[in-house]
Image (cartoon, rainbow, N blue to C red):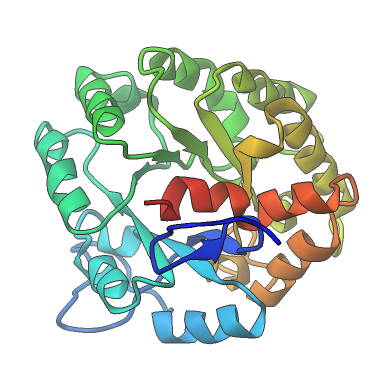
Length: 291
């Protein structure tokens, strides 16, 4: 039988758990207004709906990532993790250009957040002194940093990497395989070369968004395989990116939650069964749900 350890939400096998490492939730609710200047989402993406899909598809736990429609007001997501602490962990957002964000991280940790996300990353603020202070603070308090690079994010890694080299104790997660085009060998090499930094991890996601084919998106599965080879199975993790995965108005919104889970559970033939369990949740449990 697999060993168990104490985990947020109770004892559960880290080997067997399925963890989705990127979803977003929001709703039109006057108690939690959308940020000023943001076009309100066309429909809600409520945690109650997410929980139903998790149960239907065998997903045990999920990392909620603060959505951009609330910008830096993390209160709605904080409410979600207060209501369902056994199912959800949460990653916050802070202003990457503000000195106040350094101290804000302490408060977010007190509120139950377990990480912070930045993106789409812009070179001007990424290379600024304020950003380095935020990253150093994140390392000090054990906050993983998620980096969303945006389309063709591999082109940004040349100036992303030097900053990361200054904070070697910081745990970093590159979202969605840096949204690298699988046909772009130079970008693929840049993403794989970043594996030289042992603190960098990668989400195996947006496979569907990056593909030029129909399910099971074999061309971008090739990208996933190269990432796993470069980083090793201990540094990769599954994500659905719900509800973006089903929003046609967003790049890559051409599938649904169930299909993203099916992909990770049934495809990726280059994985052994033990490696698949690490991708599906074992690695993520260690980052976001261990106590």
